[in-house]
Amino acid sequence: HHNTDKQAPELWAKLAEKYDGKDRWYLEALGIGDDNQWDTFFDKWLLLAGDKWKNTQAGKDIVWRSRATKTSEKLAELIALEKDMKNTYRYFRAFDFQQAEARTAALFDLLEKDNAVALLALKHADPKIVQQSAIYKETVPRILAQAQDTADYLDLVNLYQMKDQNQKLLALASTDNSFNKEATDLLIKSDGGSSFQKMLSQGKAQSIKAMQIFGRSEENVVKEALKKIFMNANQDLALRQMALKKFGGTWNGEEKLLALVKNKQIPKDLETTASTVFITVWRQSLRKEAAKYLKMTTPEGKELPPVTELVKGKGNPANGLKVMEMYCYTCHQVGNKGNNFGPALSEIGSKLPAEGLYNAILYPDAGVSMGYEGYKIMLKDGNELQGIVSSKTEAEVEIKLPGGTVQKIKRAEVAAMEVMHNSMMPQFPLSQNELTDLVAYLSTLKRKEQLSLK
Image 1 (tube, rainbow, N blue to C red):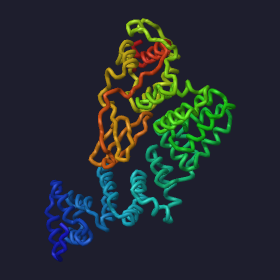
Image 2 (image 1 turned 30 degrees about the vertical axis):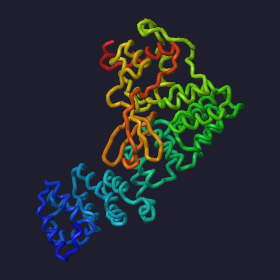
Image 3 (image 1 turned 45 degrees about the vertical axis):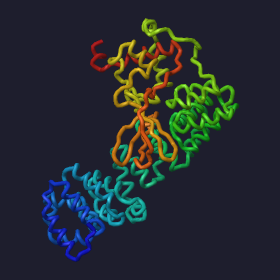
Image 4 (image 1 turned 120 degrees about the horizontal axis):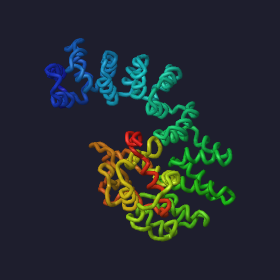
């Protein structure tokens, strides 16, 4: 390790030649032994191996593990020869450990390959170097236009800060729920919120549409525009109510709204609207704090009858859908509508009888579905996150926040993690009619084979 003896490169090359393409520990030992001396060691191995490294798993693995100046061009050679996309992805990931200049120069040679390879090449190249190159204006738009996957398209727009995609981003933000927030954030990043402001200036119908599209954004330009609407007593009341709900309907928005409540800055005619926002928040601490300043009452102001009585009622599914849209789509999906946070409800009517549905809504703490346990993550900077941990590695934690937003946190930034004992689903302040209608609607969500038998 870090052996500077003149014979070290040749000795390492001979040891590398003994690697059988199977022993991963041997391969890692070669990588550690070569650390900080890759160019001399790797060059010596290339002389010893000749061209045969391209035809053996051992040779391909050594190139994959190497960090030499010549590694990038050798990885590009492997990708050009490779027919298995699984291996192709592996070689592209190896580019991320190479020097930016050498990596990008080698990736340029792959931009004329089939679109899948060209797209990956653009993703792993250094954007600043690509943007300064002669091929930028022609090649990047061509590959972007051929991108079949929306996620790939958005990745490229973000990486290369493309300013000529606003119209398509607005279309995605308007129609594709799966990528709504990402497309919206990129659009705001591109035009500074001018698309949002323009829609707000085009009358009530367009203002409603604008808030539906941009309302999930945490960007300050959106929050300030929404605040301006609900603080203006001359605006339409329904618009002001919607603006306040959108303002407080995000993680940071909840905190901003609470600050306004505590400072008594919420207009009197919107206090009830503000209370409905806090009744549905996930963080109990915010809900309790808001209750000190707002009346947090149920719509009818009275207790509900027991579930055994509720199941005897006949609700209106059409009205139940409206209740669903108001309270449940924030965190649940039915088909393509709603957000992927809590369990999907597309077939809930086949899984639970009416009694089970009532209990799940009224007593969410009674049974948390496996895989949907809430976590409280305390960060070293004093901040705290609450959500569902979707993945954990040694390097980072991925947490899904209410509303479907996914945030990645480096392990080094985490002070502590603990499982929450309560369900993240709040107890909604539904009237008896709203509750009965909601259960009636949920009961219609059956598996396709069950529907076909009717």
